[in-house]
Amino acid sequence: MKKYLAEGIVIFTSIFASFSVENFRQNSMEKDELNDAVITLGDEIISNIDFTKEHLKQVKNMLYLTKNVVDNFNSITLKEAYQIHTENPFIFFIIENGEIEYNTKYQDNYFIFGWWNAWEPVDIFFQSMLYSGKLLEIKNKKLRNEIESIYTKQEERVNGMAEMTKDISQEIGSWFENEKNNFNRDISNSELFDNHRNQRLKNLLKQRQSNLENRVNDLTNYLQALNNVVLLISTEYKKLEG
Image 1 (cartoon, rainbow, N blue to C red):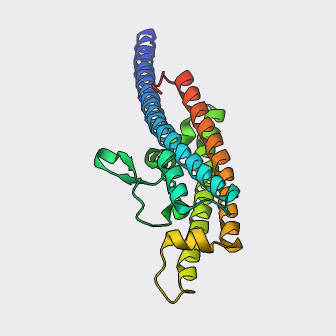
Image 2 (image 1 turned 180 degrees about the horizontal axis):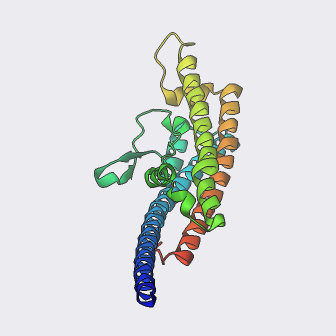
Image 3 (image 1 turned 120 degrees about the horizontal axis):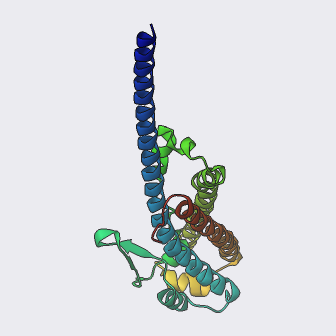
């Protein structure tokens, strides 16, 4: 009887040990998978840091030009506004490998008043973690909440301000096109702006300035939040290059 009892204990212990080893292995694999997922998300956030720095510079340049035009509305010429943009550009084209090239060829257009610069951060891996449930596996509640806030509330806020810039810019463009219809001859944008600007245009530019000031503030806060998350990830998971 003792023999059978001993054999039973041995068998039970072997099975229990086998399950324990398997559970340990499974938990280890899941932990590694989560670690890799968070590190990849960190890489995506670092990419957004680089994008946001460049975007913030563009919006600041947009604000600088708009403020100069508003402050000197009665005297500044369109040519002088072009020169401000040349020295503080924000209109750009996408060239090879996703690189950008700033445009300084104007051809008598009013784009410096109507360019709004779309907000296009990367969120592919965040969406993947969100729908796979990996985001909820992050045990650090502060880190999880910071990530969720960045990709939802803060990005929505920044995008909303960018869309407002777009709407105001379209109204400015409409001002130029509608004012031209008041003439029975062709008139250049330079002549129209230099000699026929009015309070309606100034009001639109003041709206644009106010919007851009808020946009700069939101982008600054967003950039700080991105850096905070990278710091949290590097502390808990592994050092990230930033």
